[in-house]
Image (tube, rainbow, N blue to C red):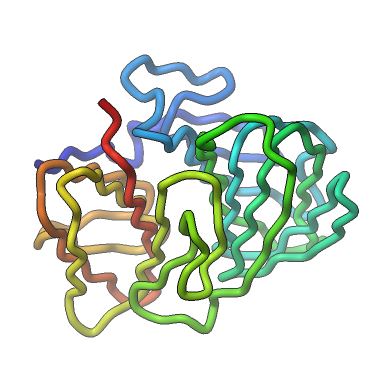
Length: 231
């Protein structure tokens, strides 16, 4: 079964310097039917104006993943990291017992577009940690995040996998275990899923299916989440 949350059905927060669309309830946006999916709690689609960003603030007990679509992030945290992320790069921050960080648009002239994703960890009070990797050279369907860091992916403390789908000449088929849920967030452009076309910002939940067929058009990207079914 496939269910769809269209792009314009998401929550929105516009602060002038930040325009953010929320797939799930976040901040002042509350929708009791959109409180997350399995261990996936947040997908925020953030557009940040040049020179602006998120001042230093704290998190606990959350796996926080950022994926840059356009522009460049400047990141600083209380673990001592000062890092920059460009398009195609992924950051994983395990907040654990507590971490403070800031995220800014590193450019004075270009916009920043990135996805911020929160996953609930399998246990609380973990030791905070930071990871970063450039996936821009990978094509097709590539594994970005996994529980065991296999195939060069970044690791998180939860049974969740995140794949990136980029422009493909032919459909790519992904087998889904019966104990999992598939969720696809179309990040840019258009994507065909089981023969149906979806556009940037659309979210597609796939349940009770043993496989999904995906194809991204040119200059299109989507993220595929493989999530455990929670009884």
